[in-house]
Length: 412
Ligand SMILES: [Zn+2]
Image (tube, rainbow, N blue to C red):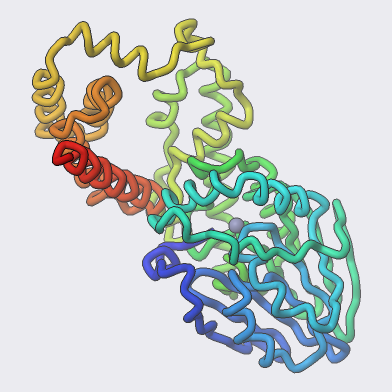
């Protein structure tokens, strides 16, 4: 995943990446970028890499710093910021280990490329083409596994465990000799877990908590997470694990309760709450994801699309419905004025949804588009969650493009 800092520095596709390299204990290193991280461990008989940074250009700046022959690369999962740099590290033909499900992910990235370019643009507020081919330059694993896989190299043991959490292809690694766990994105630097991304397939909340509980049971002294970009040590390890596990289990149980009570999803996202004592937890800052995304995500995992409203079982296209509703209102100004009133009452989201009737019925109504820009600007200005904020900003850009096109056509 990409963090706030990562997104801020989002000339993401620039090759001007200079990883910061640190030796944390003898033979244990991390290389971090604002947008990715990796760890490598030198064992006396070869190096083991855990993740590979985002792209080959940045990985090439690390490869010369690795003193031993690279014997293994382990992917913690198939997200681009963990696997994108692998090509820089394969000169010595290392064994590349990953979950059994990781190759399916690479395949999916290939056939969904246009869609993935679009959603990356929304999620990170970058140009639609930015992800492009460079980031698809994936190196497939040479060996996959499911469950547990342990190997020894030199003076270290690598206990690898596959599971489901942020993705279905998660692998986390425990190295007993240094009491260290490398857990990929199972925790992200002091932020609310990324369980729920509006553009991505469902994530696995309950399994996620269980994997974190397995990690906690090992009582690690050090945890590298967020790729290798963040190191927890000492008391922070336990506190961070406890906060993440508790928030996941609490939100999970609330969603389950509301599904069983047949609460509508549009109500559920406002009802589910982070427990009070965790609301200000330093380990759960809502800078990247947010509880509403968690709720949608889990709902999609446990619940079908049908929301128990018969009007929604086999609906007509939304545009057609909005046109009918707008025909009943019959007055664009009325919709615009009402949306503006709602904004003035401090209800920009409701205003956005009401205005949407007009936007969908008359997609070239410039006054409506201008008001939508105003509403999205209002929403984005208050939003600390990078994914929702970037989404609003993306659509502001799209609206401005539409306005330009309409102006151009009217001049012709
Ligand atoms: Zn990830």
